[in-house]
Image 1 (cartoon, rainbow, N blue to C red):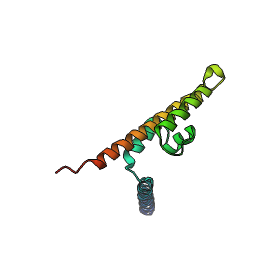
Image 2 (tube, rainbow, N blue to C red):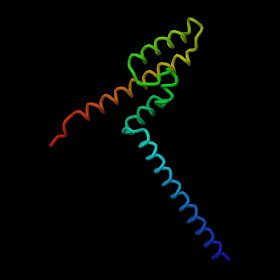
Image 3 (cartoon, rainbow, N blue to C red):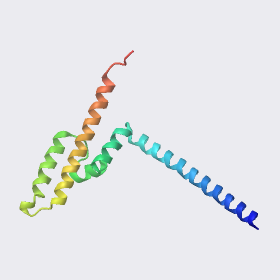
Image 4 (tube, helix red, strand yellow):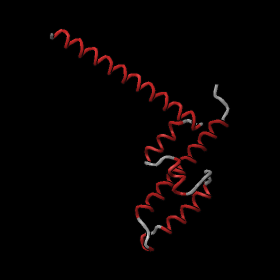
Amino acid sequence: MAKYLAQIIVMGAQVVGRAFARALQQEFAASRAAADARGRAGHQSAAASNLSGLSLQEAQQILNISKLSAEEIQKNYEHLFKVNDKSVGGSFYLQSKVVRAKERLEEELRIQAQEDREREQPPKT
């Protein structure tokens, strides 16, 4: 009886282990596909998202930006920052979200500029 119970436990553990490994492989594949879909080196952009707590899309939505442009970011930031000023009845929480969104978008602009510089440099031999 104990022998059969041990076999059932071992087989159950094998089934769970295989399912976990398969799920992990699928997650890695989905992560790779998402990075490729973004069309840029996803490591720096993902790191910037983790540091700021906002994704690029969230930051663009907060500042109502469709294309990354330093002038448009600054213009929308100044407007939203003034509108949400606590002294005029605004929300400090929303104001902080506006600041974080601006920081995230500026970081993305910096990453893009760095990638452009790397593409323009001739390969080192």
